[in-house]
Length: 454
Image (cartoon, rainbow, N blue to C red):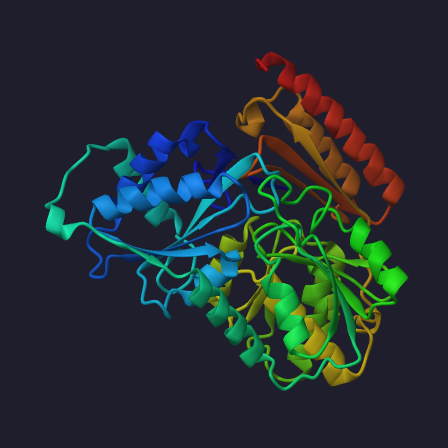
């Protein structure tokens, strides 16, 4: 059984409710100072800021930008850009750091801060700790007026460069005659994704492309694929892609209306790259939440699955350590390291479409023999996040479940790094048994948390 704890930054940067905690104007200015302080040794003091479509993005952008400029940093404002666009474009605008203001798949009232190093990778634990320390030691310092930073409006250029990079990577495919349905979740991909697929010749049928600052992810996008399922079937589309609010993940709908999560995508791409001799070494990185069925499918193909903690940052760290080209999460974060250092929903979509065209197959035909084990994932709201051994009755319950599974299933407990949730994952060959185990553990947890104030 795998137990994971989360750190202060969470699994994907800083995240919370707007105008609470770190996400008030005053605290954001303090955070901007801390970022400048933590990276004051960098020779270049240029930073690129992108954001999704939440109405809190403007306030957060202004607070961080003013604080950074007050410490002498030049701030490039990229406007609404997908998270992977910021990661990819840092070298193009010669920035030392990148910031994305987004809460990814979370509801509109949330927002967050993701920080990238100049190579496009998310900050590691040590770099995040440096920011935390600087934040705690905050003491406003004033620099001479002639050394203040300036802002550069880079919205149009940033979007155009990202689109050009995507189209250039797949310029050899012709999607004429293909119908592609998109759900952009009223988020950061709402302009870019339709343009990219249309430029490659596809007939694009988009939904979720009318952001108003308050509707991002609402009943749409990667967490709510039902609308796109219906659209794919109604329009007889060849494929559908659901993105989340910041565009770093994708969930697919095949031509039959079946949902493909990240495990299916990893299975299809890994099999193809391995057969082409591109998967060297023959390994794929995925998190503890990926299904045992993926592990078995890859093993039968001659490919090893390398497990990591949850979070695409940890997937990328494993990929870097083992020199892997492919990794991802069941949630739809897929990293193709020959293109990007982070999950990119649009690029992953293009990779799948290119595979379909190359093999002249429908999406449903790309992973013959891949069968998932029954798996239940349940989120339990919690008032706090105590160590698991302090929750009454939980250790005994875990011990009993592990004996029942007898090595033929998996059990994962973890606190969400982005929300006040405890996630349980139970997996095994007997669906009825894992349903009973999930219900039993849920009762133990709810009873155990009665000792903690709400």
